Image (cartoon, rainbow, N blue to C red; front, side, top):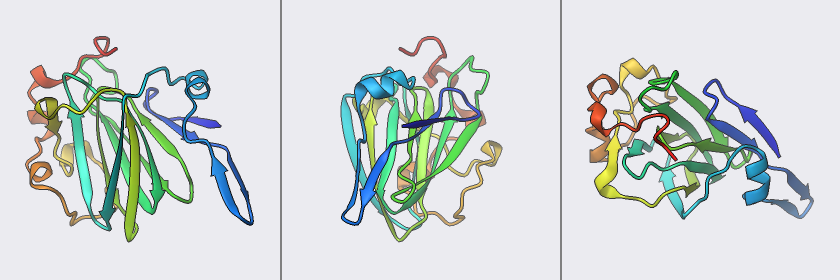
Length: 187
């Protein structure tokens, strides 16, 4: 497995080893010991699957309390995936990393607790899967406005299909700091 560091050190991209031949391919999508050796020490407690059509944008979501780390991957199609650092006292507070995840590149993106996360579908459809380090808690969920100009995210689509909740996301500069996780307090 190849591990790629990003401009925000806590965000990691993994390229699992893929064994393929004329019949298809095999790859290990998670092995606790192998990922631990690569720097991913968290335990995962919940798996989720999302299916969406081209132009659908989900996010930017984060939880606090019950901050979730996520190991995300695309099994079918392609997405533009984004993580925004919302950890108070972080040297990269307000910065983001974007990565293309697809069935073809088989990359995984690790988004640790304390980041807002979202993605948009750039293929006809996408089957998106992810592991979480904490359980979903709707009372602790918050939405950051996906197209906030202050975040300077260069989304590949301009007229995204978003949920009502995501359309009402809060601009980064208007976030209530009492709901934000604090770097160092995250387990």
